[in-house]
Image (cartoon, rainbow, N blue to C red; front, side, top):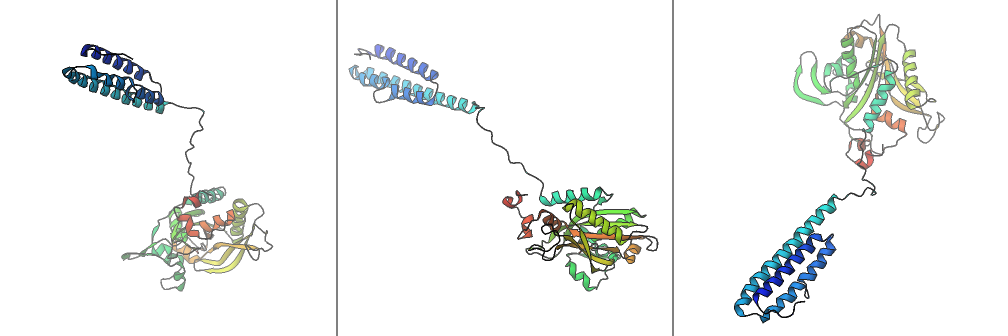
Length: 351
Ligand code: PHE
C-alpha cells in the first residue's frame, strides 16, 4: 500500500486509481460471493479505501476537507456499482434455464362424473336409434303432471314434492314448476314429432324438495320413450336388457316387477341383476337384484294428450336417475350423494 501522502494531489490520484480498479473488478464479478469479497476488499475494516482514509492524518486541515469530499464520492460510487452489479447478476440468474430439472406438470381436469355418465348413457341408446332431446327445466304443471294423467288433486303428486314458481297460473297449462321428472318431456316429444315412430332419450336436470344422504334437490334422469305401431312389453324388456348388457356388462339381466304410475299401464319397477353375486344374493343386494327405476307402457290418455291415436299406436317409457345408475355401474357406495355436487376436489378427482 502507498506509504506517506504528502499532499492532496497525491491523495487524489491514488484515490482515483483505487476507484477505477474497484469499478473494473466489480463489473467483472461473476457471482454474488465475488461481490461480497470485493466489498470487503475495498470497504471492509482493512479494505483498500479504509486504509487510505486513515492516511489523511498527514494532510493539512484545508486539504483534509477536500479529501473528505472525495472520499464520500468514491465510496458512494463503489457502493452504487456493487448494487448495480448485484441486480445484473440476479436478473441473469433468473434467465438461466436448466433443462435437466424435471418440469412441473400442470394439473389436468376432467369431466364431472355425471357428465361422463350422461355421455355414456347417450351413446349406449344412440346405437339403437334413440334421439337425444332436451326440454325446459322450468315447465308448466300441465306437461309435468296433468298431461301425464295425474289430476291436480291426485295424491301421487305428493311423490314428486315439486318446486312451484311464484307466478300467476296459465289458463291452460297451470302453474310453473321446476321439472320434477323427465316424463314431462313425453307429451312435448309427441307434439314435436307428431307422427310416430318416436324414439326419444330425454336427459335432464330434475328438481324435488329433498336433501339427505341419498337425495339431492337437483338431480338427473334419463327417460326413454318409444312409440310406434305394435310396440309391446317385449320391446321394453328387450331394450332394457340391451342397456343392461351394454352399460353394466355382458352377464347382467333385468327383471320387471309390477308397480304403479299414473302415466303408464301396466307399470313396472325395473331391477338389474347384481354385479357382485350375479343374482344369487349377497351383502350389497340382499336378494340378487338392485332397483333401477320406473317403466311401463304409455297410458292411452297420455297418447291422447300428445295427439297420438291410442287405437293405432302403443309405446313404452322408462325413467331412471343418472346418479343412481352411475353409482350402480361403478359399484360405488357413496355415503352421501350430495358430495357429487360439492366443490370438494379431493372427492371429485377420484373419478
Ligand atoms: N317419472 C317417473 C319417476 O320419476 C319414472 C317413470 C318414467 C316411470 C317413465 C314410468 C315411465 O319416478
